[in-house]
Image (cartoon, rainbow, N blue to C red; front, side, top):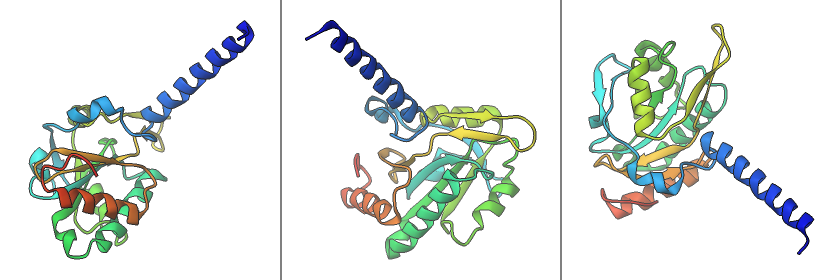
Length: 204
């Protein structure tokens, strides 16, 4: 094998590693497998009614946890629409399922703004919107291994953020990652598979 060929292989391997790392960072591929056992943990925020909320909001229901913001132009409305359709397709099982939407833009996402945003008829009916201070959002994002970063300046800035959804069990444990752009049918499949395993589910 020639030295030139080995150099080309090395360059291609490096390029693949960089692209894969960026994809993971942006939530396209989800978190690295070795991190999944540590996903979740305590947080202290407020819900869309302005009431204090912590990790207890996950208890008793299967929860689709998604980090985003109300001014998000694409990933957030797309994901919430899919979750809303999935909720409808779950039928009676939807009573045990909820969406937890956590803002990564606390400066603009007040409880009132979260409530208005989640009132969209196309979004899940069983939805909890959480926001808080910068420190509270950072703590929640850290617990869930979520990446986010403000982009731009002025009132029309955007926020780059992870775009996957976590399915959490009624015990507050991690079940699996639902990838971005999953169809409502795919989401229902993940949820039903986890439900069939019970509250101790560790995959879906």
